[in-house]
Amino acid sequence: MPTTATGGARLFGKRPSFAYLGPIEWDRSGSLVYGLWIHIAPGNDRPMADIRSAAALTLILDDGPQVLVPMDAPQLGQGAYQPIASWGQTGYFELTVEMLKLMAASQKLQLDVRAWDGSIVSFVPSGDTRTTLSDYLRARGITAD
Image 1 (tube, rainbow, N blue to C red):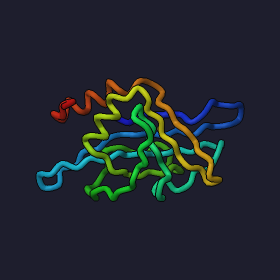
Image 2 (spheres, rainbow, N blue to C red):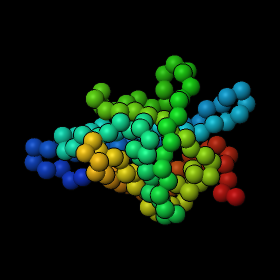
Image 3 (cartoon, rainbow, N blue to C red):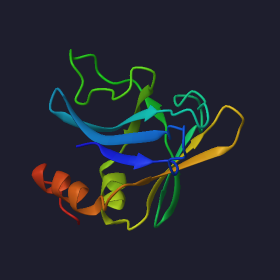
Image 4 (spheres, rainbow, N blue to C red):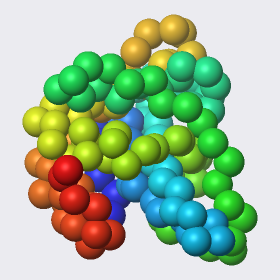
């Protein structure tokens, strides 16, 4: 259930960058762990820094910024999502149930990514993500309490 976000308007001859996000749930011997899968497909507008480096990604929600912390995903064969662009970057980031709930309730969802030159590339969803994220929580029996 990746959410696609675009980082800029398409200009003649330019391919904009895109970000894809998707929550993941792992069952580690009966203990559920959540993560956020992110794939950045850079266009020819601006090269991105390593998304797994410290403070490279920040999620902006109604409640303010949340710096994303990289994590190692379990090596269980094929991943939940497939990278969109072979030249892109994929990473997994720590995600709590509380953060999932904040994301589902937030009208604002923006992903800020550090570019190689230190500037920030902001990605916003191409549609409303609240319904999709709320459905994800309900399907897993996670309530809004």
